[in-house]
Length: 305
Image (cartoon, rainbow, N blue to C red; front, side, top):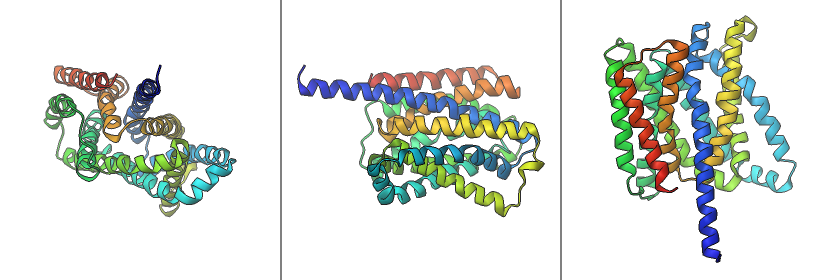
């Protein structure tokens, strides 16, 4: 086997690994809106939910960062590029998360995840216009198929809810746009720091900002119900820490456009848990929409398999 063949095989293996990591991260992130709705039902508000999420995840990010920094090379990277990871992390995991959690106060978990689905298109457009990254052949066809599936469900849900759906939808779309910018910016910072350092610094910085907001709001963990505390901790560990490392590892192996396309499976996962745990409606339009979304992500992953 010559060097070119070896490099090609390694690139293909990295791509497959990146896709697997991205899908695991997407699955865990997709459960988050359902747990947030349960946290709202347990008496939480946006500040309480974000604070519990940060309080349960921040110690882990700090511990991992300290462990990584036992190496002199890693400490040097942190000194040089850590501020960039901190700023990008606050953008993606504070501002985008705040808008997302606020949106879930007004719309269903299924509709929220479908609107967040807009971020792959934002990533493709940002990468195309600002990074001159030409979309791969078939990308827009796959996006279009996914959007048809999304449209079927969105049209149904808009006819079922009141005027507050518009406010929640605008917040969810804004969250998707901010997260798309985060994905594009994070690619270069990850190349400098590595996925684990970037995630530890970025997510840790967002956690610090969230807990500062908690102090300013004069909230109190002791006044929260045990159910709310359980939901908050679950969101912090299983829907924040674990998927953030999986997604960062995927970002180190994939382009932002390819990574964002794997999120197509997210709405179907959220819908399944929303139906089971929240008793949200499920119609033939939801079924058709999810089938199209799943087809889109399978088709995208097959292109470079």
